[in-house]
Length: 410
Ligand SMILES: Nc1nc2c(c(=O)[nH]1)N[C@H]1C(S)=C(S)[C@@H](COP(=O)(O)O)O[C@H]1N2
Ligand SMILES: [Mo]
Image (cartoon, helix red, strand yellow):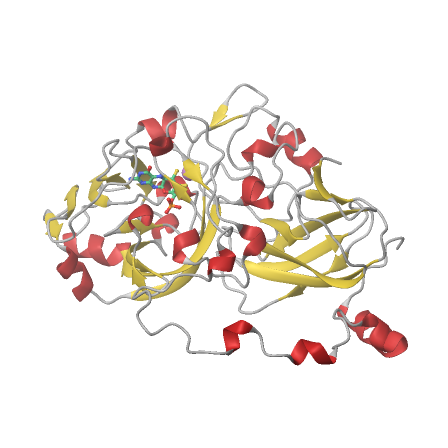
């Protein structure tokens, strides 16, 4: 290997050999124990504020948008570089709205199930809360995530390249339970899910294995859904393109055929090199990205640091993540932090000794269905450059000897 990248075992060995030189901290000086002003009086009382907020020093850790045009038909992206672990705090969950966020009174909201069912049903929010619930941790990813990278490496933060993904503990009722309650007729093969936003966003979902783990959710990370995420109730289809997880869910209509709604004909299809378009491209394929260091950051200290990132697959669990510091010539296995859950973000780390050398950092994920994240060249060979959705290629971050990190295609 020409890049000194260190696996766990190697790092331990090096720690013994290099001793104090390998530490990632400065030596403590006596004056650093002097009492700072914040330790000299009472702090703020409880309930200030009653609903807690991050420290004011974290004010730059916010969602951002790259959409040009009306913000009611836009997306905002999660600040992945500043997050830890696998859970996205509710206030930082990415957003994608086609006609803004409706303000819905939960007491007046209804979820109707009709079409090819034995009996039409209308659920109030209280009705939904009476059914057996499940809580599961899953990512939600817009199929447009990463689409800025098809042509040129233009975005200057991992928030901008990969921030249309978030991961929460979702709580709700299995969709199958509600459909059972209505009683499916044998001809029912598809279900239309429709939102209560003014655009009435709707998608057809096939009633096969795709819906086995689908949830009708009313809570995220322990509290009611945020308005931006579909309050008071939304669909959550684990591992499936975000577009199908209809927010502000008001209607499920059972039918024998798909409905061919606007969102599955004019949009959310993938134009292939042959000129044909893929329709109903449901699964989000295996993908990963290094979040630290990442584009827009600058390394200021040499020595050992952790390379940190996220991996996920809509087809199951992450089996392995490899990291390269030489643009994909050589790879080392990263450590996966537990828990490693299906259709969920998995955090990976690998210690790296940076001594001011230029490097190209990459990560490559493999899932337990056997899929390996493709290089950009492989993806473009298969899908061309006219696609908009489902970009899952290996991402490259170039580290200059100055420590500056830029977004490159290699
Ligand atoms: N009713 C409705 N549901 C919707 C949308 C919408 O605009 N309206 N956007 C979809 C898209 S494209 C995505 S990627 C996800 C985004 O979910 P989030 O805003 O909670 O991140 O919701 C989907 N569900
Ligand atoms: Mo989306």
